[in-house]
Amino acid sequence: MQGNLIIVSAPSGSGKSTLINHLIEQGYQLTFSISATSRAPRGNEQDGREYHFLSTEAFKQAINENKFLEYEEVYPGCFYGTLKQPIDEALAEGKIMILDVDVKGGVNVKKIYGAQALSIFIQPPSVESLRQRLIARNTDSMEMIEKRVKKAEEELAYASRFDVTIINDDLETAKRDICKAIDKFIGK
Image (cartoon, rainbow, N blue to C red; front, side, top):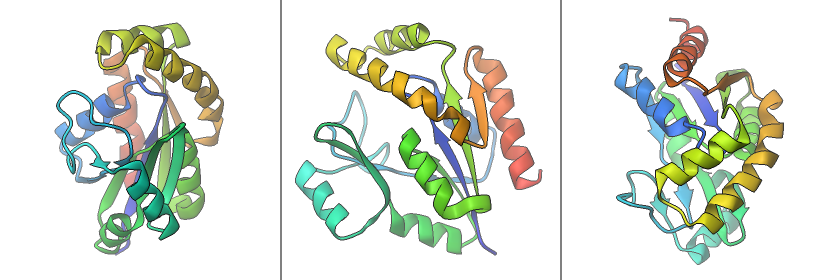
């Protein structure tokens, strides 16, 4: 039995991690794909739990060795990517993989897997509300927050390229909407 992919993408601060955690708490049998990044850990993040933290040099070497399903230089010198091997192994075992990837990566992975993948875009209610969420998160400098907001404005244009768009204006509604989308996809 071949597995499936659920791709969740959103501008930073839109609530995708919260919604993915909700799916896991609800008992969905999902295998979380741990992305790789060249950025430094934030807060209590640990290598191998939230991300595989690689140096920029190690990340570039993995790119050259074709080890990524997708990757993106999201900010200058700051890479994010999905390693191929864990995805291929989990799919071969019939697992449902959930990927938390940037919007370009989400579009690229969907192209590769087609109907085997469900792509979900989490959209903030507005750019200003996104800015306020990032400030409240208290994990980045104001300079980084403004970079994230500028990037978010570009990323919002990708929403139409996803199978499902969920506007995260009200968290409880967004939780119900993502569960409905997953249930429909996996035939629950």
